[in-house]
Length: 205
Image 1: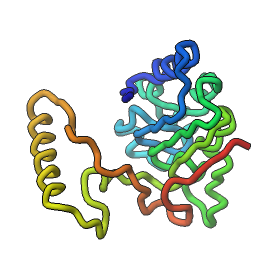
Image 2: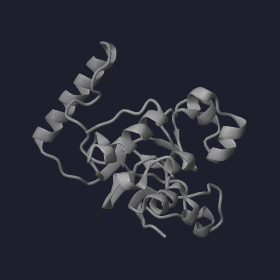
Image 3: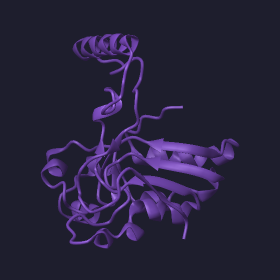
């Protein structure tokens, strides 16, 4: 099931309804932008783009407008979700930038404070395993071969067809950006340096 989030409150209600419906969540994957301390479903405003180094709390206090707050999934959002909607062995994966750290400028890795990150907070509050990036996320290879990956002619042909479909849809009222879907999950980027590569696992403490 794919849920498009245009309002965090609706997303929270959707999750909380799972328990009443007898539909415990075992796997949840979040594809979104992120700033320190928040998964940003409304990322893209000039406010955020120009202040990408600010922490979520600073962003809210100094810059955020109500419309953008509706797209910010933060600690308050986590608190408003009933932990019982998740199965005991549930795994939550955030592909948003830097969900696994609580600092940006630091001299050594521990200064990034992964123990204070949103990922660790989710793990603690919900009693589940959370996987998240400590670095910024990189979507470059979702539609392209991985470095040194050998691909077949069929793969290349499907890729070209998908790109043509994407460009057609963009110019003709929207539609799936890649009708055949992504080929790879997002990977971790290069920054910030000094923290762990790839998805890092956070367990309840």
